[in-house]
Amino acid sequence: MVVETLGKVVVLAAIAFVVLLVLALFFCFFIIRTKRIIFPNLVLFIISLLYEPLRRLLSFFRIDPTLIDRVSVEIRNTINYHEFVATDLEERVLLLPQCIRSTDCPAKLNPVDGIHCMDCGKCGIAELNANCKELGVRMYISPGGTFTGRILMNSRAKAAVGVACYPNLHEGMLNAKLMGTPTQGVPLTTYGCVNTTVDIEEILNKCKMKTSK
Image (tube, rainbow, N blue to C red; front, top):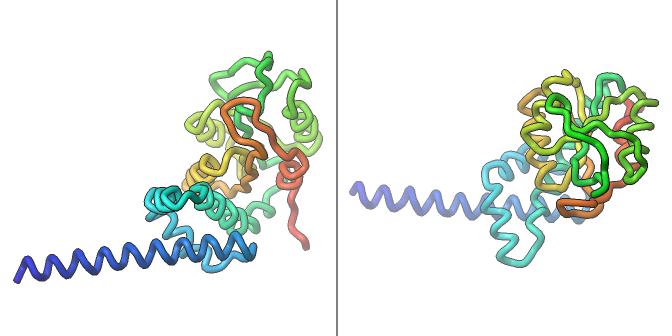
């Protein structure tokens, strides 16, 4: 009797697991294709619960697994919008990954607040730095995820714009949410560990977003 009951529980759990996977994939493809965000909190919950199985399933079918991260970022951008735009520009920070630096970058790492841009002009960071100073948004260049969390905490920012690849944005925006900081994520335009590129205009538009009132 106990074995039979246990078997039924296992079967029901397996069915629930499959149903959640199918639902998550349906919602993800729907959101990507239609650009409409539906049941955002439910989708985020399922993605968080089944993140690795979903990525492995997409890889198995030779579909880019970062689709899951992309949906997560787009949903969080939408959910965080009103709280983000309610902050002043001076209360926001821009968090950049070090991979967008030129390989000839002369800047050094500061153990407290990351890499300090020297405005050498060898990459797009100098342009972002100049625009951020004009807007009043504080800009930081981080060498990694753990360091990014430290910068976010030490800066006492009330909102943040993060730039990274989709998987790192997914993780970073989740961590920022746990810290109570509303974020907007901007993906890299090219991936890799060095000499990646960004859409400067998109980043600046996110940095200066204001309420439509």
